[in-house]
Image (tube, rainbow, N blue to C red):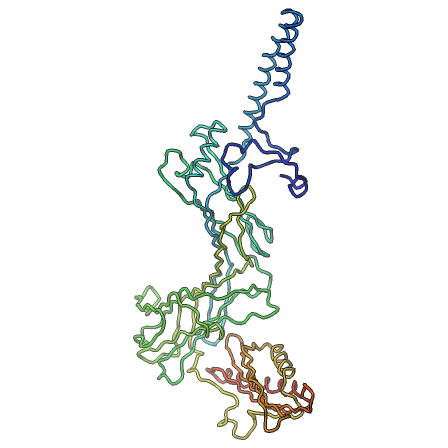
Length: 542
């Protein structure tokens, strides 16, 4: 039906003879398909007015025969077969036109949940000078729609052939409906960029054995795959993972850790929200000189690959189907620790590939709605499975990596002169929720990620009008791909004089910052974070 005569605007609808006899009336669509009167297709309909004229001529001839004899009645009765023959000829012409302009056969198979997989190839390198670089290639997507054709569909094809007088040599095209992409989809394909994407689901009956009346098959799968490229806004960040190698302090130079991180999404970041699901596969190629692996965790396969041309022999460590634990989700980091038989040469090169699965898409596709060809949705249709795969090939040179250690600021041994005070007291500052809100807002505005904020229940102090407060705040800041954690404890005392709000108080803050470092520059960054937070807290509370 056209937009001007749709059921929402006009209730007058006429059943469409072109779909009659196909067994569609008893399906989930509810009734025989209809057309608006103005835009009906060419259908096989007898010319009623000619048939009516033939009947009238017969009646007139009979009347004239009875009243006036055969002479006046015979001409009218003789003209009736001629008119009826004309009606048959017109009906035959219409029937042939209907067969030539027949609609595509609508089928109503069982639709399988849609599967959407987008793949982002990435190349990660860490050179000998410590320069980290991640370059993303063009992301591609593949949308797969499947359906199960059965015996009911075979019967409908056979009815369609009989209705349109088609023999076995003539092809029968069928239509399964439409797939409507949901969300502000950004992709480039034959559908165009940022279009309201609608995919037609169609096929030909001769390609499926189950639709042949002589077939013994009970069911057969129909499948459609739609490939596309993901369109990205200029300057948008599309690399949701990073890899950080480190050599562990205190492990006899035999410990090596590889950290997989997925940084926090900034509020103004135009890239889509992705939720990590699992590490599908991580393959690590390390030099044979490191010796056998003596410690590793997870579902791991160990192997060796012989030399190939200019590539030396390596031993391979492969993790498969690694889940993301709750603690790792909170820290947004998964660590793969290794210990080897012999010391690690700082000039070594580590290569490999990692495949990480996320829920969500880069193109911002949120779902796919399926519709049958007559406009109704399947009653039991399940939600689409939507996945983004980030596949990263990496080459990490360890020349710039040193044995990792953890720097805690302040450190009583290093700051023995009191240059960095662990605790600071602020008089006339009430340690209530307003103070905490001001602190966390100021910290967040500087790019810090507040992971948790815990308030202990207030405790009555030494006097009835004094209440002790305790707040525990923890978070993190990323400098590049390296995380630096902070821990802020806010304690204090509130003074009351009968009102429900404290009229005075004293607040004490205790700030510690810690982060892993492998060189003096990274250690200075940890100290810089403490200095920045310390000044920020002092400025906010004052």
